[in-house]
Length: 95
Image (cartoon, rainbow, N blue to C red; front, side, top):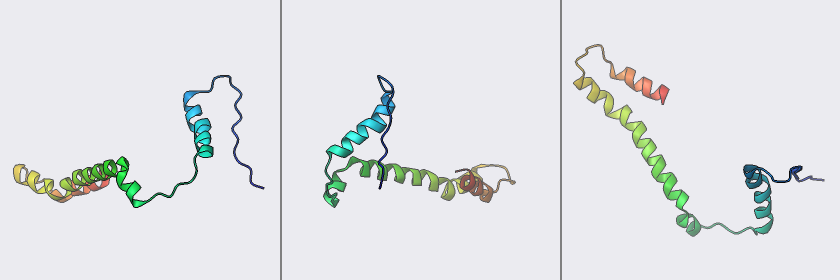
């Protein structure tokens, strides 16, 4: 016998976040019927575009210091002890 989690509410006015997480999600889950999610629904979803642009920007900003910046910094620094390999290591380790 599977027992579904039933939150015990002992307060008169529940906290807003508790209400949103526990009570409202249970109400929505009971009201909605399962709907098939298609590729057309996916293309209409804004999250796909925001996530892909955000991830692309993150990759761009992460790859740029690994590819072009060490060479540029090495050219413009007048320090012979500067090693681009150390900069690449620091970006990779430090994020």
